Length: 125
Image 1: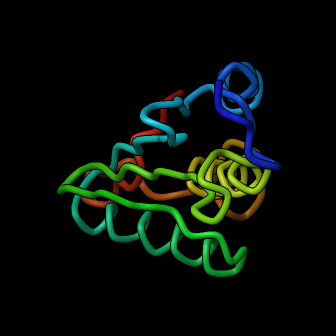
Image 2 (image 1 turned 30 degrees about the horizontal axis):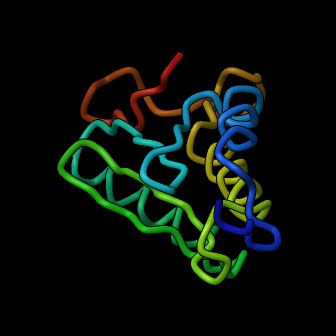
């Protein structure tokens, strides 16, 4: 059995916390991952830029893979060589911002028109 690296969460803990705190994320190949479905290339770029802004502000950088209508975000603490609290904190912030649905909470920010030309994220809900 290998010795646990300081601050690195074991797989069972990561799986439990993902289920409880970030159900749309998954543990796979040593990373926590989330795929966001988008409406178009423009929307994909908007997600990438949002994730990039949050990551740079947090000084914790994910790996990102993208195609026309999806973005996959992968988090693992490169310095610790495993999943840490930092990964969960950034994943939660990314989830909060990218999955935010204007209009669902009332107020002046009512979201994009229902016209598909203006579609952005394909929300899970």
